[in-house]
Image 1 (cartoon, helix red, strand yellow):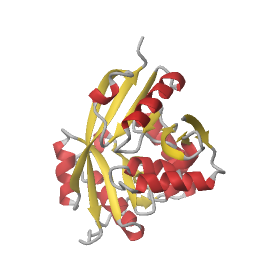
Image 2 (cartoon, helix red, strand yellow):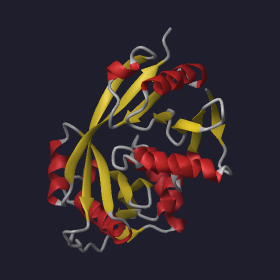
Image 3 (tube, one colour):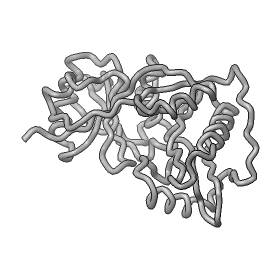
Length: 265
């Protein structure tokens, strides 16, 4: 068996990777997001091939964040998993993280040193129950012309995993006040069936004024106009945010772990 990068022009192989991930659609939602526009342009896809060049498995390394993000399909064959992990030992920089609705520290520790783990809830909402619009004169649906100031907003105020490429999904909104952006939000990625809300951030001095609720409602409504599902991640102990999302119709699906690692010394 061998591992190699799958080039973007190898459409058949990319489609095959998508088909593998779709077998466990919700558990692989992040993986699928990295296999579809806009995030696929920031993603390196690696295939595990048999001696006869048949695709056995794959994984991705998303390069849009400060640290490389590695995502593997769930229910990975143990032999394939070991081969992939040993390959990653050779090619990864010193610091990186795994993002998974399945992997735990015990799965990683034989290959890498686990620095720390951040656990989120994956929450999901469908379009069966209507979500009422919250009118707001300060809410703006973002356009291409707004990208530069949105980029400045995120880079100045938050460590959210933002990359301007994510804007191409078309689900971004912001709120203005005192001639500046005071809150912004959109999506991390999308697939044919869903979009993952993310980068929802309100300046500290403007919190407690329902701007987060206004943003989340607007984004969710727009996502569900085009997709079957809206999803999001929220830190497992952020009860205020969890309660808000539940009021907006989101339900907890599963835990998702961000496992931050270093290479073994």
